[in-house]
Length: 529
Image 1 (spheres, rainbow, N blue to C red):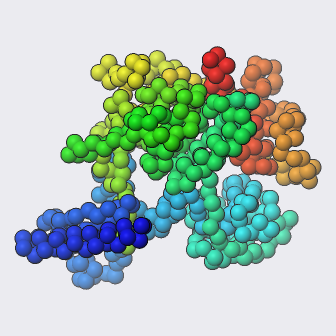
Image 2: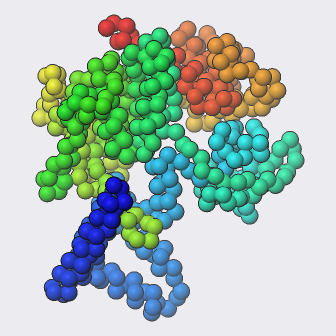
Image 3: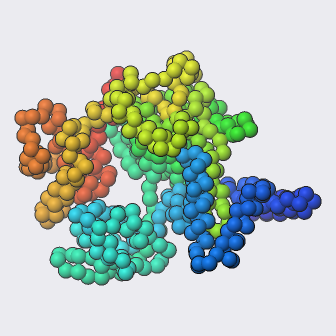
């Protein structure tokens, strides 16, 4: 069936090409076609301006007095053009396009290590369980050189680009281990990158699932998580979408489908011609009618907002947190034929009630990018009443509740940022990296004893009192200056950060979630029902 459909698509494409170029021959115009991420074809007719650009690049290539890399010039030109459209239309150069493709498929090609920057040096903290180099690296290995390039003082993102490459290839790393420099040859491989990064039971009925982003494997990962949690007694769910920047729209639709009854509207889009496309829930949802609590914040964008909006407008759950980012533009990913791609905005998202998710951007990208900091300045992240929305942007949910448009999803239950548990001690000193640096040093100094502690025992019983008092002294504070709740949060933060270095992100979440006010509010609401 699939091969027949593919053959039919090829035949139709060839017919389309013949028609397009036939029209071009008859009219004297130049035509072309492009292909998007769904293998759909787009007809292109070249205007005078576009032919002018082609002539310009050809003249530079053939007649300019100096040798010049016209590929680089073209990349910069396209990037500049895209930057003058809207905040989310972008040009992806070949390498970035390849890496983004891999990420959206739920994997990357690398050596499978996690690391932090410590005193300008990459320090390995974990080796992925799927890494082909599980026995090659150790905790606290310092990476000094990748291939022929020194990486001391380099940004973590740049080092990551240097380490990644083609599957089954190798890369040499010079490391410092126990004071001795040595060269290791690491093998690159396909490393799965989970998008459902955490799931567990909060109590005997209420479960927790964290989705970090939406990729092609997210719906399958989420389904597997639900199956496991149901075996453990799940009846209600906390769905954490905080900090989730979005991703593949169809993946978000499938997640929303789990919680909605058949034929309920999930989202609709509208293009520049006014054409609308609607997405509805199917009968495949397994959590329809179950109590649901969705956590969002100013880092929840795009596909995350589609889910939050669908749940809110259909009265299928409670949205907890702070106003989401406000990205409601639909990007169509179009191949340019050489491995590079455009992500071109072609439509807008709307929630079932008709709210636009997109925040304003017509005053320029600089002001658009300052929006989150503006929320801090206006007090919005501290007080829900600081969110100013005109009455003209009032909408109604399926049960008649009032909700607001204007950009982003405003939660049903507001949780201010200063109650998240990080006190003044964190906001005043985190930028100096005091906490992470000293906690990592402590783990290195005590690694022999700490490495013997099992994760479950550490989470249940470890008390970082000694380290907490030392860190307080470093920032010139004493326990007496803290309330009991603040002191508990400080201890929990240190313990969670230690767990992140020792066991990974999952252990950090399990510890910090015990003090997380959004999760605590979900528990309170659940117990009140």
